[in-house]
Amino acid sequence: MIAGDRDVAHLDIISDESTYGRSCRDPRCHVETSAGGASSGSRYLLPVPELIAPTVRFHAEWLATHVEWGPGAHEDGFGLSPSDDVASPIGFTAWVRRLLDQSDPAKASAMGRVPCNYWWIVEDTQVLGGIALRHGLNETVEQLGHIGFGIRPSARRRGLATWALGRVLDEARALDLDRVLLVCEENNAASAKTIQRLSGILEPVRETEQGPARRYWITL
Ligand SMILES: CC(C)(COP(=O)(O)OP(=O)(O)OC[C@H]1O[C@@H](n2cnc3c(N)ncnc32)[C@H](O)[C@@H]1OP(=O)(O)O)[C@@H](O)C(=O)NCCC(=O)NCCS
Image (cartoon, rainbow, N blue to C red; front, top):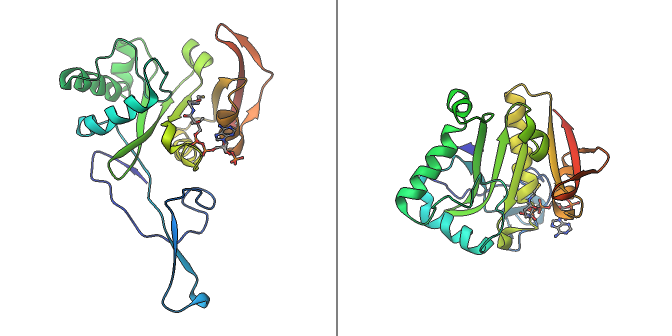
């Protein structure tokens, strides 16, 4: 589910490979056997991730994630610039406002950018990652791709990026995009595998100022 600025709830759901597109690899997931015994199957209680629009309500939670990434780390998918003052409430509010404004084509154009939607990947009140969808194709999108994403270190390798990318591809379809470009460093195995899992087709590796880059297209 893609949510707006609202409360995030835990739900008990039957794991049928649908929540993360496959079995949950999160060690916090656990199995309960129903009262009817083996014939009635097992119930998996999964923490349910959501994509939410950036919100000032999550300032403290977002800062905890920011600290975990560590100083100087590029937090892919968050639209964060080194000059953003995210520590102070005023600075954080301004940054969130800018992210939200970028989804408005008129405001994005006034900023000299293509429109871009940002979502935070949250579970309960924890911010676990960010993902961005740029619409259109300009020089920046040619370099960075339509979609960028990042997961905080402690939440990696449990299917979150794959899940979030799948949801954002649905958003791209809803915008009538025919295909999307995703770019990652040649040696970024985690990113490459995530994109390949969503049927990304690799172009020849391209040399960039940041080093060799893999460029994948996903047809929608
Ligand atoms: C790339 C990143 C978003 C992946 O997030 P994640 O939630 O750990 O990814 P998933 O759990 O959905 O795993 C996706 C695939 O990558 C593989 N993978 C994840 N981490 C990996 C690693 N460190 N090395 C090799 N493969 C890895 C998984 O096994 C899975 O492949 P599979 O489906 O074939 O088993 C995360 O590592 C990250 O935030 N990295 C830093 C930022 C970044 O590189 N962003 C992408 C920029 S384009």
